[in-house]
Image (cartoon, rainbow, N blue to C red; front, side):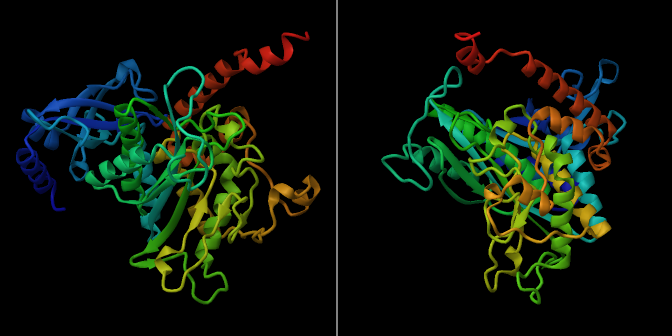
Length: 446
């Protein structure tokens, strides 16, 4: 897209052509919540060249009070008009920002920088990392109290059960207006559960797109007087929401995961990558599944993976390899099924990539794919096959993560320490709660 000044000129022209009056500068805190502040169009040129100062002391995981000055440097390539904002009297646009220290150095607590650093490691090895996440979510009538579903439809159901078809349609159209490619959308397995799949692209673009996607889904739902949630497990007894992530590495125009000579068309590089993910899966789960509620989804019986296995088609495994189609070498990929859509996508993509690259660098041995249903095996059978399992709750995930060198190296000391400290607070708060389950079960009998 040219030099910084050329990119800035492009944005200024687009702002003039579209009568933009306000620009929202977006960035993400360490928990994956979108943060924003607005500038007027009069400030746009200066902000593009020098960034915009702000106080980072109140942002989760950012600076302490004594080092609170931050600079949000807009990324001109992410400039887009927000379709849901009124266009009359002046449009509103947005740009994602890289967070810098006042002297201009990247801020180590910025999730976008964490992912960029991981991508640089891949680039140094000659790879470009592509991802395609499937983000599931629920529609409810309100955001508080017991969840009230909009429908009782099931997987791929159409009207009249799928009353949210119009919401999905409007969401897809809005995403496409913003330049975010969508592959398809459909009703998911649980009542009022839906999925919109974003078109495969490079990981940094996709992390920005995933953040945008979550906001667009919520904005459209709110416009129709309902509530969309990416909470991993909002309904007891129903499937939770996952973010199955398809991923591959390219060297130039060639898919490094493809090998025409093997029976399954997977290259040695792909097998090393799979081995790396399996080897480090328990360590990275605190990132891919970061909330107390995430572990209510990761239980047997609801299609979510809990066992450390991989397969060429089987959907009960942690890693699935979609079937190869002749002439579709570029589509060769692996699907990591643990993450949920409430994660921080910058961190999640970074740690999955780091685990896979570790497997490639150290040439981890890839275990034999498991084509039986792992859930139907006895514990003895799983042990005999060397199949471990993901952490059972947030505390176990924290304990495993604390000793992970891979995680510390990928996130950096600052983010690692802040993130773990935050998760420990969440766990302690959760432990202190008296739940409805306890009251219903024990109050009458104890």
